[in-house]
Image (cartoon, rainbow, N blue to C red; front, side):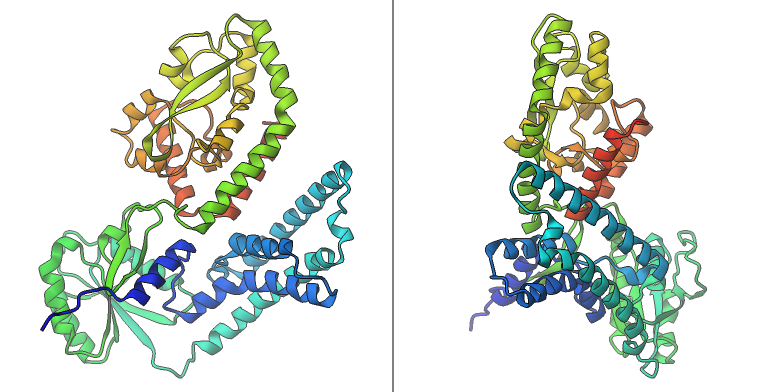
Length: 473
């Protein structure tokens, strides 16, 4: 009799589909799924109701707009985790900025073409005020329903944590701030007296005392946060807990490390955990590339006259070519060639020293200070070597030096480097000055990769444009 070891195909296809769509929210609690859908349901729902009201045809443009709204708003931020005032300020300010940008760009496009402005289209005009009202109303309704859904008459979830290390600190913080469940933490158990961390909870005893605590009905949930090296202790604890009615969960200590877009799922019947994965391995990454192409093309056409003028001035200011090629490291750590206006003397200095190479004259210093020397990199975005937003590309010398002394330095190359990024809008600009400067840049790049979304990209681009045009820059 043979045993069929083929993975369950429906489960496998579901896992692949969820990764393809970029779905990374927790499906274990229905409230998490409901909150994640509030913004796209509100914004897309109002749009199509208005289309029906005004008798508009289901033109493909509206399907494209709906798809873009979904990608930009799913999943909805977990506003239940913050105060009502914080949520209200974020929603109102976000909509004001969005409406100002939409109307402003619409006015400019209307002046250049025969297209009507946004507010002249009844569907979009009404959508701009009805959609945010419904969005806010649904969030308020969600806050009112949470206490009712978490029935106070149901059995209270009382949890204990097995282990008192760094993973226990993360778990305790998560349980305290989790708005979806009413779990009370009774304390922790640990027998490693010299390795305990202060997690702000009482120590209830050694691990051997935990099963008796459960059997006495003092807790009904156990979170195991022991390190993976303690496999024998974990196995023994699980074996003793099998005879109790406790719900048991395990949080490996490896998940506390600095992961890049970590997620968990099922591959057939086998659980898998992604430790390091590009955030663009989903359909949202395809949309990001489309935005790169469209945005770079528009910016290149707009800035082409300025680029030509600057190229002529470079030729007049010094001998040598107006443009130069810079050797940098890009996606997957491969070497890429980037274009730039020449701000240094011809020769190997720029390739060897990168952004610390001295400017050749006053005009070269002007190009470097204003960062106009990087204007030709819009061509590199169209080529696919760069993105509009991403980590900054470094020279070979910087990569060789800092890959050995800055933890995780090369992980940033799992995505395309960008013209601007999270580090740049937070003041970490220009050439590398110190080791702390590089560490700060890499930390900001990690933060960008962990929390990446198209909304974040748009926010970075907007702040970059505003910062560049500011007279105080």
